[in-house]
Length: 258
Image (tube, rainbow, N blue to C red; front, side):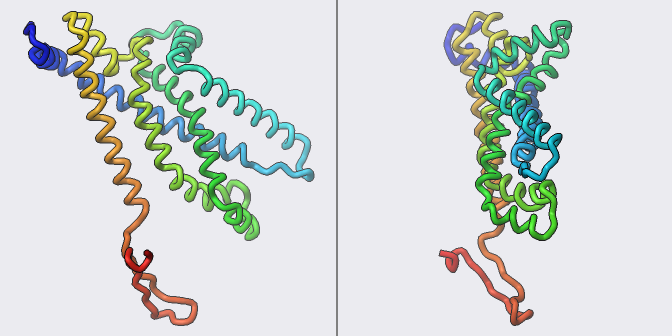
């Protein structure tokens, strides 16, 4: 084992390269599954919380929605008010006490999903509120139901507005997945801790972990920025036709918009 700092970094990186790679894959898998599942949870909660309650509705609908919203608010406040590390310990040793360590990764996916869902619920709700109410009123005026209005008119605009926040949650989940090492999920932090314990070179082991996290988050951030630009559409485009002249063509450029 080399005594120099960089020699130790290179030595540990070579010996643990396979484990660090496997840990990085698990970290990305945890973040991806957690973000997607959390987004779906937040989407359902946001839709339910925006369902209008009218005096003409049945007592069952009004009471049912009130109870459901109360349950959702409790879930959101509970998971946003406690650390994910504590949630991991409670869920793994309290809810799944008989699960073997071989399934810790799947329990970790469940934990990070429901934790992210609490944050996503408020992010999606904020995105829905950001869409002008006239969009929803126009959809309802032509006979759409609340569900049709949300899925076809409001949510497509809301999701575009909250794309930066969704991407931020994905990046946060990459880093926060490190807390799942307390339940023996073999991600990057767990691998670095194992290497540090084996060679008693703590600084070198976690410098490697820092480099792995940086590469993952930097790459994902650049990809998300590219996706956002693609969703914005081209800067230059041509409008074909008008209300008076169907053959009309209006070329719009970035300079013209300014």
